[in-house]
Image (cartoon, rainbow, N blue to C red; front, side, top):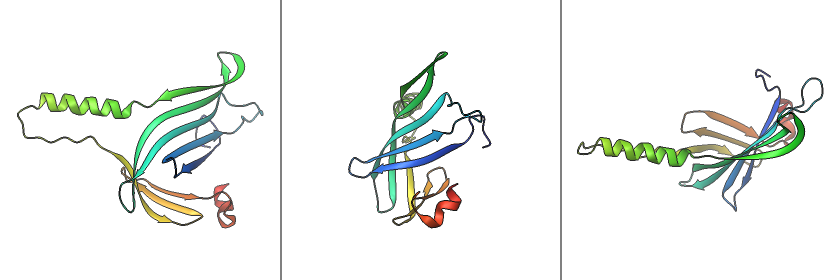
Length: 148
């Protein structure tokens, strides 16, 4: 609870058949019991296995579930496209144009994670930015005290 938004619960919903991962963040009600303005944030990611342990990611869009429209209490969703891939390609294109004639090969960076451990209840992975994530299934009894 070291944020101005208050408590939150995060989870991943993995759909291997569709090749998607949805990061879901549910924000808890305020201390007075009222719902937060930002109730939920979903980030939809396309995931493709590019090796035995590496999963490449393409961020598709974010969905913000809000509880107010201006000052009126109304639950609604705002879909936000993630233009990062397009912006990155533009930056690389401009870099290539301005460095024409210089022998430089620029490749757009890829978002990915490497699976370090995986079983039915636990996943440990390391991102391309060297962040380490340990994620447990909510129904795993031994992990329940750690998830609260």
